[in-house]
Length: 110
Image (tube, rainbow, N blue to C red; front, side, top):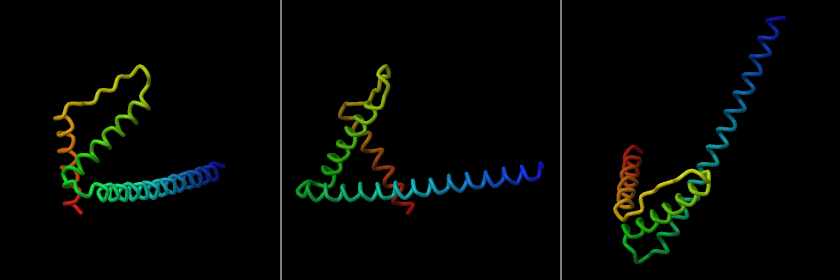
């Protein structure tokens, strides 16, 4: 009957929604673990850069992250797609300023 079909459809929708919610939960757990690992790596990097100022260490880490991002983006881009990144010293300084601004905003809201 139509009522039975509607109930079956409802149950099916609920099961799908629960599966999607569970997948998002595990994705969130995975992202949190990844961020913890990244933070631990940053801590180790700062320890290795013991003699460098915080600004110098941050600049070196930001530059490394920039090159990692550049590598990842260009590796995934289709062969016929051009990817243009600023590569002048001021471009990196602008990126550093933007990252600092975002970090300060995030820290101030916590």
